[in-house]
Length: 211
Length: 261
Image 1 (cartoon, rainbow over the protein chains, first blue to last red):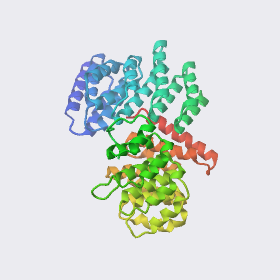
Image 2 (tube, chains in turn green, red):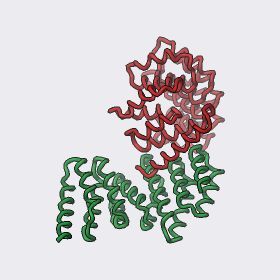
Image 3 (cartoon, one colour):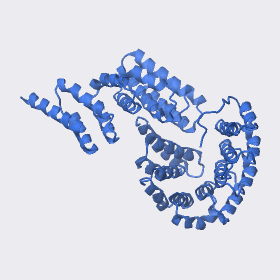
């Protein structure tokens, strides 16, 4: 009986969320949905509605939806990747990348590698590459598969050596520090001699002193 | 203003200098921008000559190429350009040109600029006050602090904030930072940006805290925390322990913002 009530409750909350008239209501409903202990069956529906909310016009709603998807964790990863490829909306894709970066699951590796590697003509999208680069740090530091770790380090090494945006290189430093394998440390040491930006340089030194 | 799409591709310093000396005004303008962006020091002299250009004028009497040359010289930060930039301060017809020259002189940071800037402060003509007050603060010209105090009540909020920035750099009194912080929540987006930039150019912990807590976009926060950190790293006057503490705090604030959009 309990499970039945629970399901009904979830369905009702999802319906309310789709009809929410203010951003404040929507954020509260998102939080209610993600903190609910749900049965296996309705997890998919919650994830689907949270992904819908990533396109909401008020920035507080997608921000809450990202947090919700991160809390739901691994189950969100595949639906998020599918939603990324199904969309051409850069705003939505940016939130998806952020959620995947925060979850840090290795299934998202290929997508994040691609995002970090793409030079975007529109400078405003540089932040998405930076977020993705931080995601590679999480994946590289938690994955068990050595090939995944190797892939993350290779892209971060390229980022540190070849990209123009200081914040992107800075993010690569923090991610390589997080990964902290011998390869990652070697990349950081090699970058010391090459890095021209004083702020990235000081972050490199800090990383190496903490490792 | 920056050039959006190049009228013709300029791929080397040599090509840029040739374009600057050519007769296509759009291309000359782009060449001046290119030389500044790539910090081509060999171009210092031709850029100084471009400060006297007569060929490219707008209908209102402005000198677009001169302005762009001044900005490029600010990016070169080459002290050899100081005398030529000082002459430009006398160009009565073009306020924006004087503004670009003032900003370039502040970026170069040569004390020979002080006298020329003070003359503008005394002049009866309309001046680019925001840039002028910022430059006086950057060059640490503290002799005029009483005059600057008056600008706290100026009709433009941006001038008020420039004065507050100058007076904070001079006195380190928190009330001046508070004046700028007030604008971080201003309903006008441009004033919020401007306040974040004012704080970004003050290399102090209080300014960093204000930026971290402000309701401005994440990229703007990152950029201005970086500017504060650059100021801290470049400063030799305050004590080293304080600098290290501020550096740690700024690095950790930047670290936290990286995964935000």
